[in-house]
Image (cartoon, rainbow, N blue to C red; front, side, top):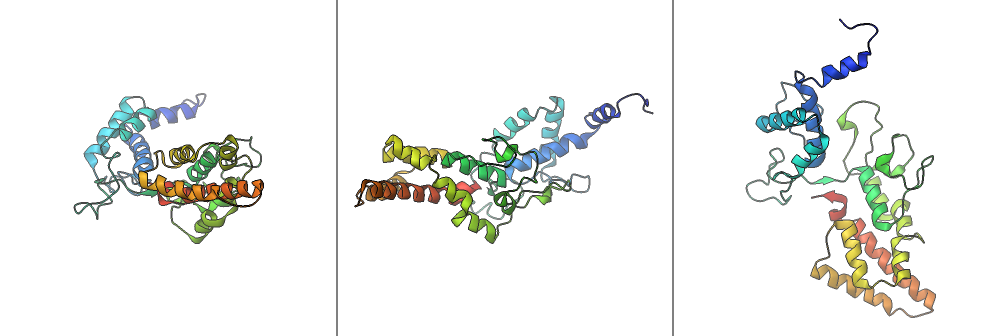
Length: 274
């Protein structure tokens, strides 16, 4: 019935976003929900169909209706999810929900996606990752092409986008990931970079307490606890009494700070969303 002179893409877009097509809003809501909650209301996330019911159909219908009724406002959808009680729950289980991974009685722990993990490492260390063919400062999340070479991103599950399948992105742990985090060049070169945070903090003469506060806020979005701060300040204090030349003492202190940053960036609290 389409006029051959009209833009068929416009007709398709109109049909796709029509109130009569409930699957469009449900599919988008499910993907955004899964991104923040660790699991979609329908699981697998890309298997939205009548014969695969949601874990909470009333909730799914209400969120999808609000999304479509407000012009498919993604920011509104994200705001609603993040303001919900379900999103703000702790991940720590208790006797009543220790076996629940479906009904959002606790937050689902999930590892940071590959691109987010690399970008956060760059942010904490103050050293951006360089991608061939892209301007300096380009973040991994901004890369439009998954064929940009990065062993780090590949090992942490970046999808090739060959097929439209949510399962193409892997979050499964493997030995290569452990090697990248423990002694790989990606992280260690950022830690020891001459223009990185460790070198800059020492050059500016920041106090040990201020450096720790900054690192914890950058890595964990919180201040260190009393016990954490006491232990780390003691370690940094030891590096101040190193013997030898001024250069040796400076290198010893810098190494201590780099080791402390490495410990933060390889911790579960940093690598996972709780």
